[in-house]
Length: 130
Image 1: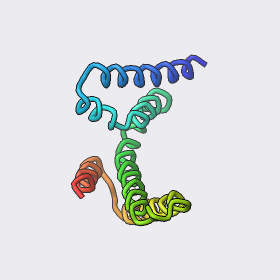
Image 2: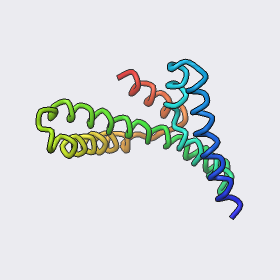
Image 3: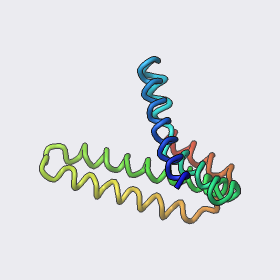
Image 4: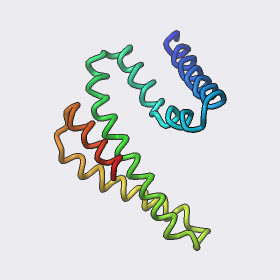
């Protein structure tokens, strides 16, 4: 029971800290910190507390790869929404399908690779540059 309360408080604290940072700093700094995968960080922290730090460390490698897949969904959604901008009624639907297709393609490709801490960081860095 206490762990649930701690999870809620930590999540609220992170949101409040990011809000304060956005309010009292420049938009660039606020954008930089808000782009961090805070949900993943919170989840990995509590996985480490509840299960083990070793399991959380191993999960972090694949968490980085999951962020690549999420970026591919966003890229696909963006590209398909630009293509279907003039068809407003179905644009969101088509963009969602396009994003999901990008996600599936990238996941299929990434599944073929054996990841380590170093390769996951290198691949995610390359994907960011693309």
